[in-house]
Image 1 (cartoon, helix red, strand yellow):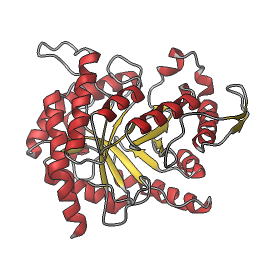
Image 2 (cartoon, one colour; image 1 turned 90 degrees about the vertical axis):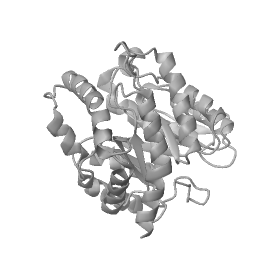
Image 3 (cartoon, rainbow, N blue to C red; image 1 turned 180 degrees about the vertical axis):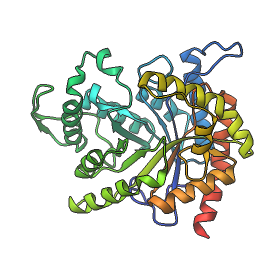
Length: 358
């Protein structure tokens, strides 16, 4: 769906519009014999997926940062720079950048570089992430989980302003009047905050005046309405102009509802139970999957008509400006993901526009 923001990529799009994007963690697929694909192969396939998303007119393509063997993307900006050279229109961003375990100045510099290579199409989504592997990997103490994110977000915001930085904190040496380069040519770096569903995270985002993206991976999307309302109220309270609200949810599009569910279910189940074992959840089954695929559930799985109707329902329930589909789910085959991307651009997007205009 085309960018209707009049040059400001984070301005709200209005009641009759919604921007459609994609994101992925670079989930490791499986070879025909069941062995895991090499990470390098997954990254090359990911470039093909980004090219297709651009070709079919989708709004954005995001890659999430992880540091574990079941995901291929650990350096989003390197991938995005490669994607920038092979695409022409689509916005390119992270989903998310784990700011707590990175250097805010280097994050800005790397995304500013992607912005230059892409002619102004870069964006960054900042968050704390849902995994903690980056903390021991980079020598950080999990006891500082909250402090690291709070201080690094404060420093990033000052660097993003593209003015000499004056900052002091507990997690790194102070800065007195230094600047970060390269600057962006025509605008400030579009910066989102990814939140998992706590009021504290919503208020922090509104305090900085950044657009917000809710990760809705379970339950019912309409249950996020109080948090969406809180964001609107807090933005007004802090005196910030309203920015876009977005949601991110897993899903899969195929020619029919039955095909989409049957293609996704075994891969969803494998991923769900693997993460569940790590986090102390009970085992899942077909009942949970089907409930999440229902009209009120958090999985956007089905034919283009079914997925389009569900996105329109999300728009009307929460008033969001953008929806990003996490189209990679466990070892779902590359061919199935490519078809899902194609249908999102050629069938879902125009149907959503038609429904909202009606």
